[in-house]
Length: 347
Image (tube, rainbow, N blue to C red; front, side, top):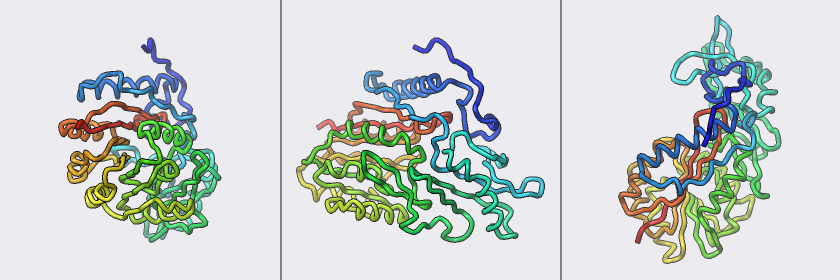
């Protein structure tokens, strides 16, 4: 039990002003304790689960300078366009020169980004929203001004490496912003799924293929369903790059294809990962998954504990059991927490 919270000096001079961080004035160990304790309290009260199903929170290897993506705004301040953040919940623009949770490559690029954006933005524009990303190689690309400014050629794709496998992503596709924690996440999700060569893996809301690419060599087949066209393009690239002939990519919604995929796999062992947007599963997708009792295991990954909690209540009311929960600190110094819950049907 934590006996006292240790206050420390925030690393960032914008802390408390830009609104992006919550815990820079705490030691990292205290931040982790607070997040873990609040999650357990919420889930134990709302779901009436035991503390025993929670595994320890997985910390980020880097509590600062970890974000490989920043969403910035270019706004007019006292007649001059300045690069910065729009404070959460307001329209207030906070000009910045660096960000203490962004990777060093992005901070080094920040002055050049502002200069390049000012040169590119049309004179009639009063503002613009920009995206800047980097990767394991230190490659930097940005976009947000002009049509198709987020499109990259294949030679410019970003990549990160997980257990020896390169996984590619782009400016216009979603990808987790904390690259350093991803190997730990992959290890944890693998342990929840209990994969083997007799198992079919369903990756729902699959994105560019983070999980199926990491686990493909360990399963009989993998089936990835994703409705974002931009993410599907990168997923196809990842599949071809690794020559995964037993990976099947489906462009569409989970609720439209789940039943068909499950039926095609017969009585073989089947496990699924579902990683929906922050708002959680759509009502139709939730209904399809609740009745998918052919699945031996389901791992639900969420970046919003409240929407996860709502959906888990629905699963449990339909005869699913929640037997393990793992929190991941994807975004140190902020109030965000990623959570994975493992479920199995009660037959």
